[in-house]
Image 1 (tube, rainbow, N blue to C red):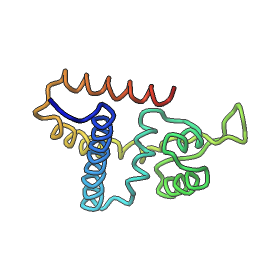
Image 2 (cartoon, helix red, strand yellow):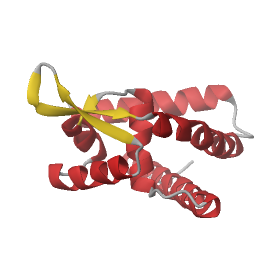
Image 3 (cartoon, rainbow, N blue to C red):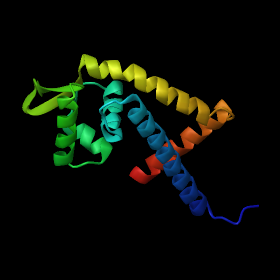
Image 4 (cartoon, rainbow, N blue to C red):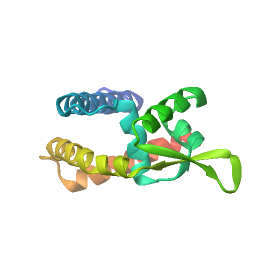
Length: 148
């Protein structure tokens, strides 16, 4: 039987999750360089969110990415310059800008999904689907506990 406490095991789990995230980041960064795509990993994270939910305001993206408004403005400017997103005025609040994918931004999704799909397939190749469901439920519960 393990001598670790529950909180020590949780700490190790979260450290391991961070390590997995770093491995994913490194893999994707290498692929970006190999394919000579003019984008950073941080910008890809923004695109990934927009692939799930296009047309959100800049503050929502900043909150999700844990960035302040000025650094998010700079990153969105980079995506606009690359013609991957466009800003549009919110009809309900003209001070608010909504961020939408362009056709070029949407086109990049296919490439990215294949890379990420390959990587996730490799990562779970010998893990039972039930184990993944259990781990996901547990991490979601931990997140809920921390937010309450």
